[in-house]
Picture 1: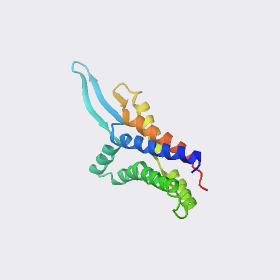
Picture 2: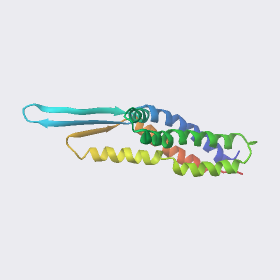
Picture 3: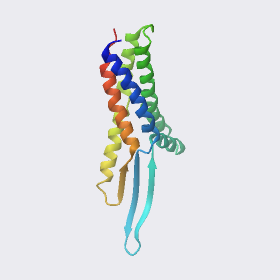
Length: 161
């Protein structure tokens, strides 16, 4: 195995280590309140969600399509991609390694993980512009962002002979 592929294996493992807390740890808190004269500030909505809890909430509220799409593109595709890349890199006897690598390159385009990170960040910035809405990013956002960056770098380094 060449040096770049060894680095790629290490980065894929690191990306998986970052992915799981990125999915399970809180990613974003949103607090919506109103300032009412004489009463002060009243809390109308307060929630903190991880990616997995967001998927569960969407399923519970009958938003099955959106929940499934987030599950597919932000959870399943990244895990499948990592497993297939590790197989290509660590099992030299596997047939059609180049074909599997091409398949991963194709499904990587459909991994919406990086788009999801940008969407959460834009939602965070948008809520910061309203005095009645307070948003806070949590550690899950940073783990998930780290996963996206490390995974992209690892995929770019892979060389299949």
